[in-house]
Image 1 (cartoon, rainbow, N blue to C red):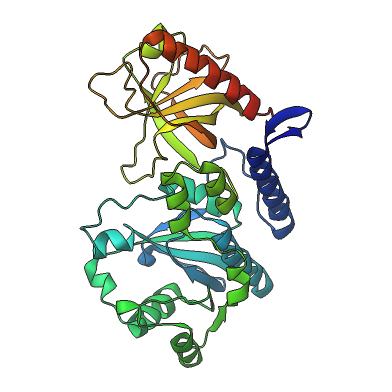
Image 2 (image 1 turned 90 degrees about the vertical axis):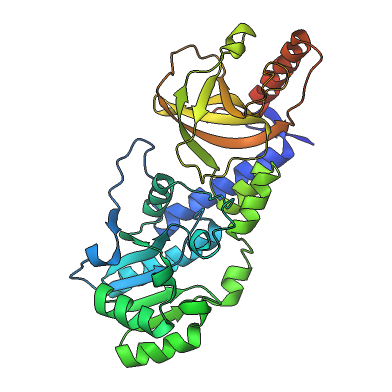
Length: 354
């Protein structure tokens, strides 16, 4: 279904995604989320390991991987920041690298993450977080009991005054610790513990796993609605085969630095590229380019509409708006060029100037 959006016809599904993101941005302004310019240097205080963290103020902490920093995470972060403000302290997230699943289940090495480290830091700063502790996750660390984790790390090293957790949060060896054990520890070690009620988080009904599944199926609109922001990729432009230029569609070939970063399902996407302090309309192909590449090497190529600057060696930030179609092989180059013309027109209709 096609609807009007600021006088322009766009698909209803894209309009709904835009509305959800706009509503979320408005909510962020009300609850203390900070708008950070895209070129802003992150001033979130980053600590590599628990031993590097020190604070002379009250410490209000939460812990978890927070991959994606989605709407469910943001509910926890808002409660954390509100409590820190109320107590006159600092908000702290203790997270881990590498992802615990990669250490505990190395055979599952195909796990892909929603955020690079830089992306996660940017999103956490937007959430108003004061400190991010990234602690090494090792087999030895995974063997800590719930008591050792709380007493030796959170109390004796971090010095927590309050702990905020989501519903059904577990920690320690074999996930033995939970809310009940935390309330016992809180009484012994003199700190507050607050669990966000189940109904607060179940209303959101979001998980990083659901978002990964959406992206692996190419449903970037659903993923964006779960995230509360556009799914993004960062990468450097590298030299390619120049096939796009021969077709009249010069492309920037993107190399993503983090091997663990999740790449959406192969296909053609309407995306936006951040250049010169603004987002520019573009279309992106993810796949093996079967019509022009006999070796069928997997690549990420982006064509910016009405743009002719040299982008080689430049770092690009890309956000996904909508999947246009699947990647397919055409009978000849002319058929491919005709389809690219159609893709360009669809991209123009989808991407509304902001």
